[in-house]
Length: 408
Image 1 (cartoon, helix red, strand yellow):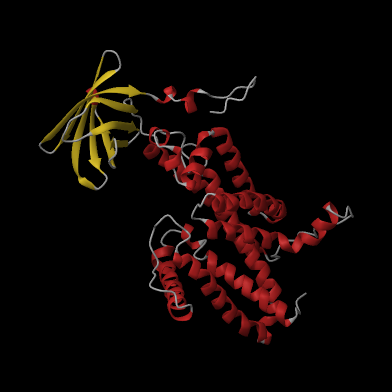
Image 2: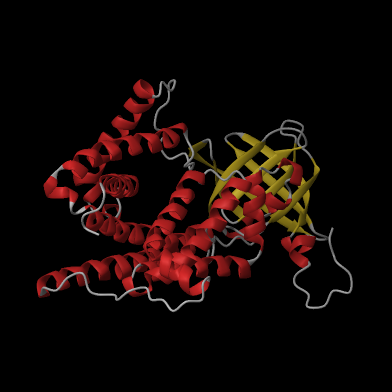
């Protein structure tokens, strides 16, 4: 096993180096101050190489690394894959020939599979935690329910679908957390890889089917999960398909010396204990920004419109205000504070330096007086209010018995 054939050694080194390059700076990104001290310089070198590879080797036109777009499928991300593959092969080729290193190809690859286990495991745990409470898939919103289905993007359709059911979100979250936690420990890593493949395959299909721009990243999570399982494919195939007696092999500690065992224990406790705990705490702390209580929530339809500002609808939801006209663009505002007697302090998302006021007064018969103070301009309107329970999507709920399908 240690004296692998030359081609096999080259493949093992190449795959291992690619895993390391792709997942980097993990797990340093979870260690305080490591980014400023080391990671940002290493990533800057990788970025320069990717840009060089794209411009000078592939001949790709002008492109750059766009920071924080929310997309993992940018031109840079696509160029990064062949760039890292070429770099991995370039580094692996001499290693596979040097006598001192070539006998360690299998051991190196196995260690990179351990690295991949923690990378995929913690990533899935972070994905899973985000499914609980207010997170990745928010529930039905006024803004979403007031948008025509035909005007929704494929990704927006998927997000609304997943966000509707808390039960389904919990199921997805538990599946991802379970797969991730199982991957963090050697004794459960094979079971974790099996579940991870199922979970990641579903994520990949959703991303490709609904044009979610995380296709490359989710595909790598699936690939790494398959690689983690690959060394045990034969006994799994023999047991489940051929119905033969089989074994996954004895699981032994990788370290025998006490000091190395202690170091391993500290690392495992940090990666499998401390980091998931910080993820949970961070998600819980984010709830105060995601779940702002707003007693004035609703869809306000104006019955009288100011001719200078022909808005016909106003959406108030949590910390967001949306003003929209019949055929014009929508204006988005942030609610900074909700005071007594219907006074809301708001800021335009295009210019958050100036605070303005929105005043709401409730009259009899579901009629409201709206007053918006913008600098010296005062916009007044009267409106009717619609609450969430008025929408069929919300009020329909769950029914054990359906004599006829209720498919509208």
